Length: 395
Image 1 (cartoon, rainbow, N blue to C red):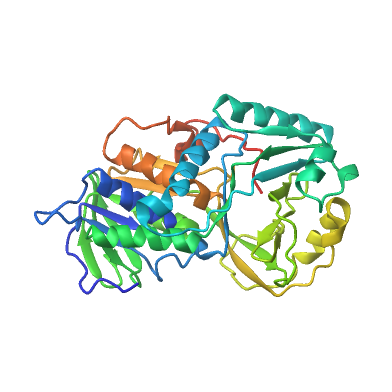
Image 2 (image 1 turned 90 degrees about the vertical axis):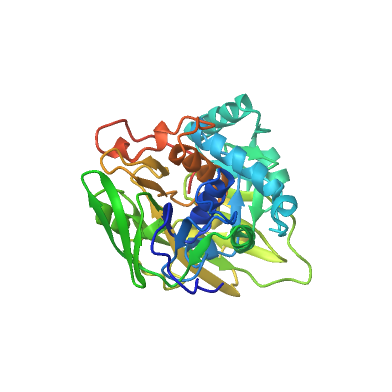
């Protein structure tokens, strides 16, 4: 993925962030004719990445794709994105290794069981195949589980996981074919503005005149927002996973399984397993991997899936969640700085919502009627205009 030879002096839209979210926005803007020049290319869309495309959270080894949420807004984003991933090979010519193993959220208290039952009902109302399972039914779906530790589960068999790096590559190819200007190793240093709105973006390679900026900078979004005078309450938090050795006899095929109480989760990874837990960590940009999360993982595994306690690991990975205070995304337009838009803060479920989220923001930017109400995702919910909201099915 090479850097564009020359940084454009001007652009119709500048997108800051070259992960799956920024690429998705660029794709849907091009679909709507934004940035098209006289040659039919979309050179008026300029995407900037401080490192290499897909090098941030989008570089993780495996990404869940699901509509299994409790809130209708998240269900709709997940459902619409899943349809894009189902057709990705046809539409983009890249195999993203979509594996529909399903999602299984576990309850271990009566309160959690009732909440998951309500979540399943909300999904069914939107056309999702969501099933409320008793403990023994959950154990049949995932034989690693100890039925006696559970009170119930919510199972969505049409969800699963895919390869984020392949999605990034598919979107990159499509944008390259359309002539979108993608500039990696180009750091944004400042955003210039007047009372009328955005005027330019200053980068490590020069200045770009523009009246429209999209912040898709993930864990770095707060800093980008500050450059434009927009509050984006996004904090980076390190998350770590472990990979078990690849086995000659693979483990049974299981859903992406998550425990609400502890955030313990695991699923197939090749001929082994991927293991994780949302280990409590201070916000910050530390991406160093360690095994410190295993203590909490083992405590949860000893109760829920004893066979997984004290696992042998062949490797691991550390990356960032881009967390908002309520762990739901920020998608919308600034009410105070004309021309500044944002798509960030997905708090661990950005990859699975990226296609629909990119489409939603493209609708907002181009003043189209969006396919859903974007109001719940506005950043103003943290400044008194609207309210933060609760999503149960997150880790």
